[in-house]
Length: 350
Image 1 (cartoon, helix red, strand yellow):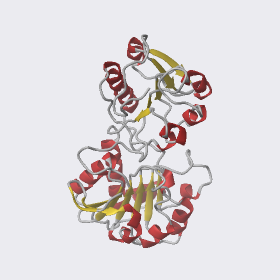
Image 2: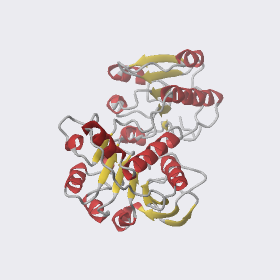
Image 3: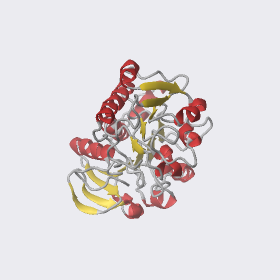
């Protein structure tokens, strides 16, 4: 059954639509599960049970958004369109969709939506906090406190410094606006270079990142993970950064060549890194990042403000109501590019 990728019919059978919710042990059920069940036939499944539910589902809600179970369960010969094939709509309760963009889903008629927009401001706040903590020596002050040492130091001025934000989607734009409010000069790095942008002023081509990172005091990674952005910060880019530069990664761990970063930090090629995401999560015990004084580790939590799970459940419920009414869905991902296009700005990609 063909359909406009921005609009899905409410149901292709005469009965209620069927929604499979992927969850896991330790993941609380959506708080609005009763409301979901008023609207649809809902089944909660774990990774082992997803394959059995997939053929009967009109909709799959990936509440356990880190799971790769959908890739494993996806039928090789599915053509979409409802029960017996593949779901018409897959929603992931996260901003990043790289784990969902396997060939079977990408090439299918299934529509993919995500939690676009919710995390923009919280992650921007986290980036601003990371920049200020670095400039104001807050990590060093805490270490000195634990050692019982009173050590007066001069600190860096944040206003007037420069930040290059890699990724010009919603998170990157919110970050740019907040950093500019703090007094930084901000540029973006995206798929296409342009000289006039409302949030960044200037956007440089991310394919030429090594030619531009030397301008920045802070390099912020807020890009989606795609074939083009994987490993975008490697030895060449790190070697072109200022020795005083600070790297912040709130995108995906695989944006960075981690061994190259360890080497660059170890020899003083850059000053510090604030890392919220890693190639392997949880960050393995014994990884060099744990013990490096100039690395600040957080547990993939930059966007997880209080109440975030409830907000994501409500976002899905609102989209389900649109689905039932035959209205266009919000946050439809361009599966070829891995992001939600913006109608107000050029395509947001790194």
